Amino acid sequence: MKKIRITISLIFIFLISFSPIFSQKKSSKEAQKIIQNLEARSQEYGDMAHKIWEFAELGYLETKSSGLLQSHLEKEGFTVKTGVAEIPTAFVAEYGSGHPIIGILAEYDALPGISQAAEPERKEIEKGGSGHACGHHLFGTGSVAAAVEVKDWLKRTGTKGTIRLYGTPAEEGGAGKVYMVRAGLLDDVDAVLHWHPGSGNGASAASSLANKSAKFRFYGKASHAASSPQRGRSALDAVEAMNYMSNMMREHIPMESRMHYVITSGGEAPNVVPAYAEVFYYVRHPEMQEVRKLFDRLVKTAEGAAIGTETKMEYEVIHGVYNLLPNETLSEVMYKNLQTVGGVEYTKEEEEFAKKIIATFNREGLAPSDAKEILPYTVSNRGKGGSTDVGDVSWMVPTAGMRSATWVPGTGAHSWQAVAAGGTDIGTKGMMVASKTITLTAIDLFKNPKLCETAKKELTEKRGKDFKYEAMLGDREPPLNYRQ
Image 1 (cartoon, rainbow, N blue to C red):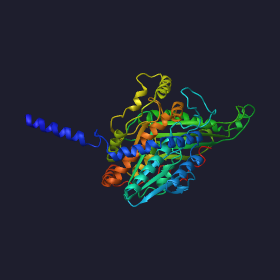
Image 2 (image 1 turned 45 degrees about the horizontal axis):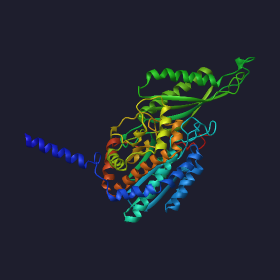
Image 3 (image 1 turned 90 degrees about the vertical axis):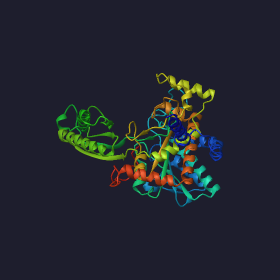
Image 4 (image 1 turned 120 degrees about the horizontal axis):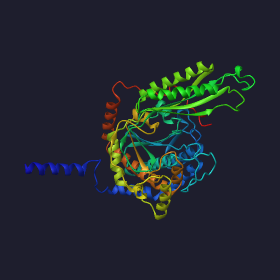
């Protein structure tokens, strides 16, 4: 019995030592060299990210941001195709030849109404202006840095394969990647790597919420609201009737669902019956098929509102994205590399900045030192929280992602605190953690192409043999003016 216990213990120690998830071995000299190469260029990439932070361009309008990244990639020897998928600010940059083809995603759009200086208190740069409250200035730049370093490694080692950087606009409600998937731009890719800014460091195999959005437009009849109200038919009444019915509908939808809206147009003056009104809706759920059903029910509330108010209704689908399909094969490799890279170390000045940001949260248990930690590896096939157009990519190509601490611990996305930290060296340090991790992961895939084969097999099993891709936004063209 004692020998059996000793044998089991030895097996356990062996597994812990050599598992790609739990290994704590010292990284190879090659890995350390790559990390050093990227660190040596951190100031250069930090400056690039800060320029995009200052541009703060909204979805499909990222002309300067996209152009800056393209220019750098061309200078580094990549072949760049721009204006792909009928999107002026989308591009594909490529280096190398043959398989495996490893794709890296890059985003660079900002959010409206969240302008903020790089300071630890609320301070708008421009009232009502745009800001990088989701850190996509870091996302785009960090991914470019990784692609360039992988290119240098391919060239230095003579390894066969192709590194491909996808410049993907309008993630925030514009679903830029969906149009790129629909156009077949990822059909030949063996694996896709991505990351996202965050308040901690992790590389778990996690899902997200599927999402579909639309603008519902109502057309009525204008009239004097006091002298001849009987002649008017209020488009605003229709919007309010739709909102009332959809809010009642919440009681009768799956518990994990989300529906939210904003009235984007509601009339011009109280004494004029509004002839036009518009409301913008998002519908979310962990499963894309459930989102389709919920959206169809939402359309019925709009149709009912139009009938009841004697107005005309039309709607335009703005975007639709799948839930992320996590790939454990790739995620395990990425997590191992994140452990090698480590988290974010603050200077004393950065610690003080972080403490002031944390003080605005009114939450206990947060500390600047949390940015150094690596979150435990987990697997979650059911999404919660936000949505991303990476979801569509993940159903077509084996995909793995990670987050790094570009923001102060405890910071939520789409907040002024995220904009503030993203405009400092805190953001740059987190960005370089991601860049190093993605670089090492891509190199592992080039060195061991069988990992891509295993990841593809996992994808096929998870999505089912009868899966056929159909974009949730249908055959509509990219909504290039959705932010205007």
